[in-house]
Length: 182
Image (cartoon, rainbow, N blue to C red; front, top):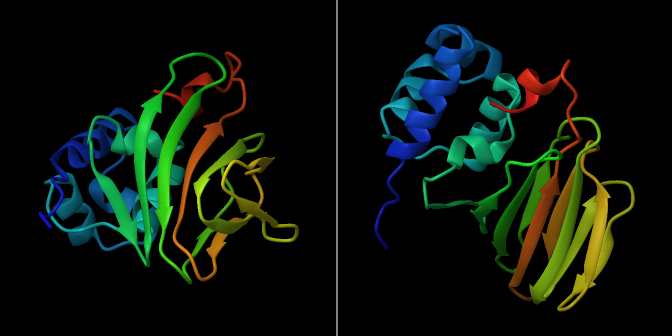
């Protein structure tokens, strides 16, 4: 399997960091990662985890998809692979992901922006998904939406699970437009 090319991710990250007037040191510190690791990511090197990219997106106050846009890579860790399929430019903002989870895998996600909703449509397999305090078992053909501004997770059992995840961000107003979308 070829190593993914992270050059586009690095370019997106650097562009967003610079546009917000953040130094490499400041963003690395705020995201809880080493400055050298952030530098390597911006140079398209290294192998950042989904969690690392997630923390950077949260610090930059942008949707996860903004960092991986146009990268055409599947990001994976701990048996979970995620690929951005499409991004909308409307208000509210909608991002669509393909996600595949190996048997006995767990993907825990920290809260998204307040008002964000995730909708999961199962393609194959079975997954326990949703808010940490009230997950739901989903099978092929099932669709389930939940408040993604709360901690949530995806857990598989004996089978692989493949799904489409639609993330709908809150509708932005003039006051918060700049903090959510580039």
